Length: 237
Ligand code: DX5
Ligand code: ZN
Image 1 (tube, rainbow, N blue to C red):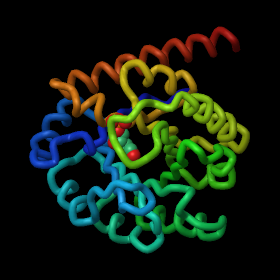
Image 2 (image 1 turned 180 degrees about the vertical axis):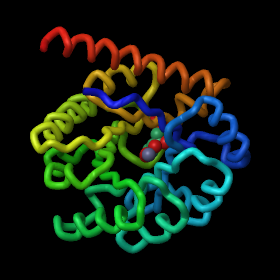
Image 3 (image 1 turned 60 degrees about the vertical axis):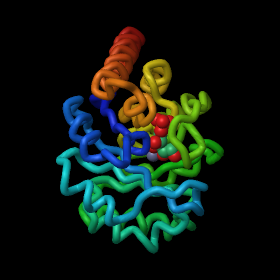
Image 4 (image 1 turned 120 degrees about the vertical axis):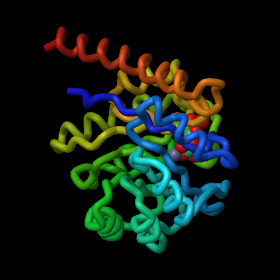
């Protein structure tokens, strides 16, 4: 059974010098999340924003903040993002250390009152998330190599979403499945048909002349795919 579809515009492709304007503009599209890409120049080659910036964003919008930490040592910096007002924090499985450390890190996010996300890079196997599925509110599947907006969608992400949905079913877990990278009106239906619930889109929203219309177009393409999938499963049952 699908959860209602959610859209998370990524501010990475917004106009940083007019970010407040762009965020207020996109509020009209009623996005469920605002996706914030934190990059440290180590785990990924690019460098973006830090905790003071997240704190400032929290002051100007009521859209829940979906903070995607692409940083080498999240254990060191996690508390800064929690106190800055992140509503959901996603860390990368490639950065969390062994199983004991990973479980402890996820527990720290939850005990601070934020939702808990775990992400994996395109080259990381879906199996690596299996031990943690019951501890998560969200799994973030990277459909590009993290670091930059505007890249092309990696099609293998579709099968990875399907595999994660199966693993979740096996263990009775139901985290949201979010997909990030190269999402647009063409690719959104593919990942939604595989079971994705939350779509991150940067370039396909803020790179368009009318970002609200672009958001609505992605939502509508994705909802059509979701309804078709629901109808298909009902027929099979
Ligand atoms: C990439 C980031 C993405 C990025 C997506 O490392 O995690 O959130 O903003 O951008 P698009 O939608 O342009 O691929
Ligand atoms: Zn992201």
